[in-house]
Image 1 (cartoon, rainbow, N blue to C red):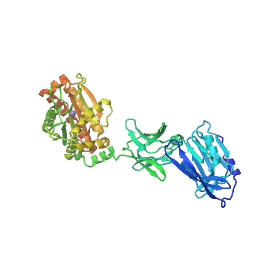
Image 2 (cartoon, helix red, strand yellow):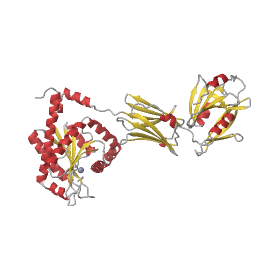
Image 3 (cartoon, rainbow, N blue to C red):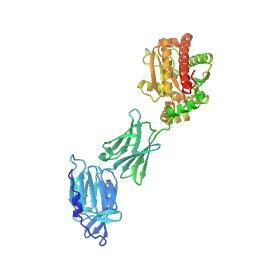
Image 4 (cartoon, helix red, strand yellow):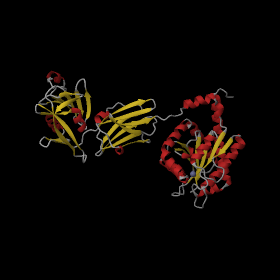
Length: 520
Ligand SMILES: [Zn+2]
């Protein structure tokens, strides 16, 4: 880098500016890319030279600024240039930010820059001639008409600062002006782990943004300039809630706050476990038969309804558990009645359930050859087909009254995330339970296993306990439909689930007791 700023100090020309100032004319500022926007800039005359306020000019040019009052220095930052001006000096340092060798130039003004109150005064015509020469695509000054035309390819998003707070991460985007409320938007792609911010009519200083130090939940910042907007992408690590976004005007900033979810950690659960292990013994099991009442679930070609089959299976499981395990069984429904998804989770928690098992049937009329059972664990959907199943089962929401359906829709994503966080503490238990259920079903029933999968189901929202969600088979498949009409098959299925629950209970309680030093 060629760096010649040191020459400046030896060339400083000090002049007196106390006398001889008078207000001059006004310069019209037209924004040709921003229809209808016209501003004006006052000039101050001294010795037949027109001066303008440096900070005022910077604002109109939408340049990034840095002003130092003790040094009376003003830096203006444009997309490709950084321009440094100092009071008492007639030299301007021009730094080209875009060229590979980043060279600096020193240019000469006919008269020095003057100091002012928290500002500097710049000889306007000479300065415009210089800017016009280096940024001809961005501005034109017509001295006869006293008109400055700005074609706003100038930077208006000047930098990013990221701060770690006790409850999350704060991202502050410095701007040179206020953006209309509907022109910026932030959202998270949770699959990819990126937060995106788009600002319509935003032009970002990509060099300054890329070099912004990362912090907290943000590990990388990538600006992408598009023709009509700018997008800033933030690579995230760890869990954050949905972004909150707002704007401040003094200073001009767009602020995104990313809260860290309050979550139950394994450590907290284990501590609690040690303190009162009895509370964690599996003394209540919640059995959840899908659908019911006005909501039939899937229906086979010959009219067999999911709601009837799953209620039958669930009751068989319940009888086995009560009789053989001597454990309290709670049903989310025992008859052909409609129970909202929200209510099912509440029933589970109200009864202090220690396990939650949902039974449903799959359906895939597009291909009637598809068959087999699946065991699911709640987690935001991962595979495309898991998401499809989740969407179909969640569509029961449409049967709820309108207000609760709307409420659900609005909160759906957040609730799902929240629920999976509450259950994160039981994730390994749920994986264990699901694995054991799948193993027993594989042993006992003829239907093939389609594996243990992960998906998001509202039915488990709020049920904070180890859980499994079983899609017992495809009612759309001829063989499986026949199976679901057979009491013998349904009993076998129930026995397999019972056996999985029994083995899980034994293993889990042994762990609790041994953790508490009471193992036999
Ligand atoms: Zn279902």
